[in-house]
Length: 384
Image (cartoon, rainbow, N blue to C red):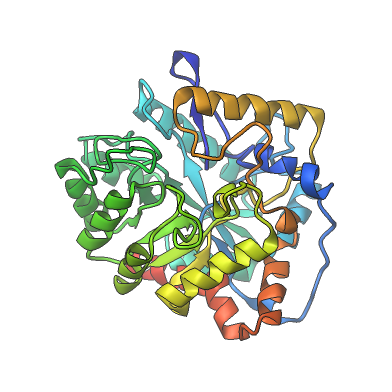
């Protein structure tokens, strides 16, 4: 999830309209998204499919429209997704992060209220199973920063009452809890950061170490007493990028019963234009290092791919330039680089990824774990 602070402390929202205004630009590499092929009666249709970091709503909807159109709902159903974890703003150091958070959660609640027969707020693992039974789409609310908390740790309890179930400690830059992925000093956790982890776990919220500096993630995994996640990352052993995670930390998360999610992002390869084979290599590497019970998918895309238009191109260009200006752009981000894996930029990406893994010799039970069973277990353990 990527949001950039702009002038006056406002934020450019890449949430519900999502990471996919950039992802829309897949059309540059792959053309318009292919129509989904429906496969009925197979294991995928019965499986729990969870994206550990995605988006919510319809990226094509006019601003302020919260009711999903029949067309967008049909496309969402075609993805096969049972639930996604979306992001509550802000990320990064903004002037009044608590106010931004309150507005963001109000927006998500408005989306849920406008679509009661289609969307379900997830507060427990049982809610994900309920969403599957009822043919609804589960929304898991989480943050990608703790700037809205800071030293006011009681806010974590308040956030939980509002529906937050997952808390990411840092974004790319430093906050009061510790250093993010772009901080070259790599100083790790602060005393407040350690206290924040303790309170997150005491509230039975799920700790997420994505976007942390290498030392922050390693220290956070070492301190954790409950299962945790790195919801969206890549394997640093395959590409040495600050947003990717080293093998030792991947193992440490697995040893705590946690899960590491692999993203569909430019940071998988040096040229920032990953293909399907690159994604498969990262998935297999994390599975081999962590074990098949500790790997997942966290695309960091929205669930619905967006067809590139001149407006989408221009939005993406401005968005990346604002991120660069704000100092929160990761190495490799550029106006002509889009946050996708082009070979999987389609409504049926999860189905096709599953089929490709089957062709590589993955048994169905292992793919089911990757696609959602591992996350379902961690959610149950962390939230129980």
